[in-house]
Image (cartoon, rainbow, N blue to C red; front, side, top):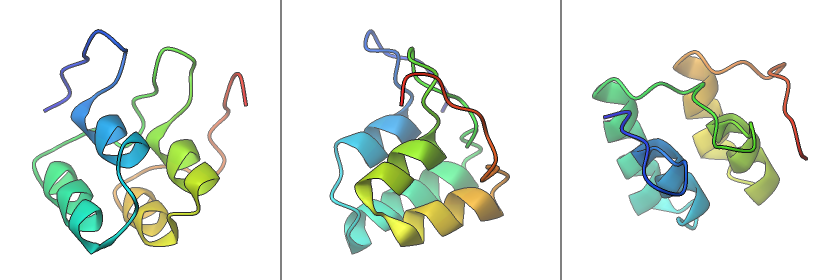
Length: 79
């Protein structure tokens, strides 16, 4: 579930970056986390899923990531 594609994204990152934060994407994120997706795996630039969710204003997804072990205090390079 944590395979990294040629862009440096996991499925979790892709669901957040390419999603709209709506109910369907929240469900996808929840399923990925339930399947064991690592909420702290960052992209090539060092941006975590939590940071991407926060920058897009996806509050519900942000809360899911924190509940799954993502830290609000995670350092981030590049942004």
